[in-house]
Length: 486
View 1 (cartoon, rainbow, N blue to C red):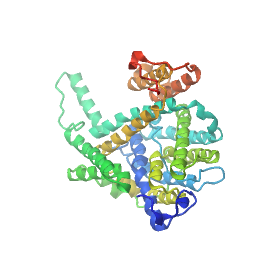
View 2 (cartoon, rainbow, N blue to C red):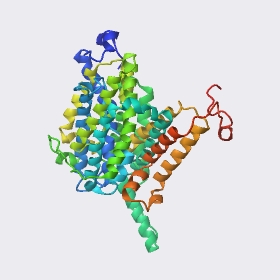
View 3 (cartoon, rainbow, N blue to C red):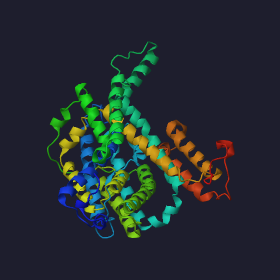
View 4 (cartoon, rainbow, N blue to C red):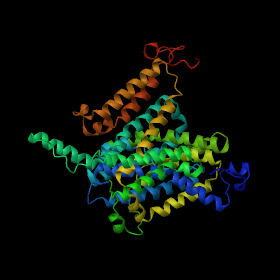
């Protein structure tokens, strides 16, 4: 949906305080919701799956997943209102869309893996304390940006994507419960010395992959062969297409929709609060990365929508709002919130800078968050369908990180920093047993892969001296790396 003169004058469209006619503002607000909806609820689905009460688990705790989806919508809307309306120094008062953050997933998975709902109290401890710490970063955000150049931020974003792509493949193949059945059958066969009985094993079947590939194909087709709101909602349309195919293949069950309440209020401390040093350290450290991501989104919005640089007050207010939004989310059992970059691009595309438009979108999210049946309907989406969507989304996270790394001057110093950081981070993620003898807290933090990679990159970048002149890496790249003049 391109900006049109009927929306207002060019000066009005660049003004965050301008309100377009409601006949245009409402569909523009809904467009923002469509652009972020799938990404917003996916982290809750991933964490519930990792804990053991998600899709396909047949767990009696499955209703907690529906609650998490509901809270993802509700508090994304609340956090967005904090940004667009603001109070005191909190909030950028810009059209910033907030949503559940992917960045924290590599930290959250080790905290809850296989531990069920009982692990969620410790996770919420991290969300709440991490949110407060994130808000405090608003007072110093301008002074810590120097420690996070594109070499560091690009590496971190790439590591986030690499940590998640495995989840996408598992979902497309049938999900963790189906994978566990295959693993169990193979282990039993090995123990008994008899051939494995693979009848009834659905993990990795052509049916599962066929449904996932439908989602990927439709998403790509819609993204590149359509325009406007249809192109923006490509992933959502791909999921709908995959859902329809899965329905006719008998893969969809509506049992949970009938059980879900029509209306429900959020419950304070729904999962309790269990003090966890690992969760607190992990969330506080990741807050640095999330804060810098928000700074980038604020700058992108002001440049793309208003043609100017973001002010210090806007950056500080956005960081405060990020933290407060996460803190409030944790109080009610939701996951961390952050600014959503895809909506930054949407503002640049439409040319509409109005924060009223985003406020309207936030109200739709809040309304949906009060109706558990919305979450129950989302929970009917087969895991294979979701897998097709997240393969695209998580791959885009990796691509975004690589794009950020393209701004790095690849001399020998920077290559060494990148090489050591990604080798240690990705290596520990792939082989967590290498830390078998470490205390539990250290093991949780280090096996995420993301934190050790980020820590090494930040420290090495601050400690290692800058090299003088163009130091090529001929032995690696044939003499072209690091020379931006060629």
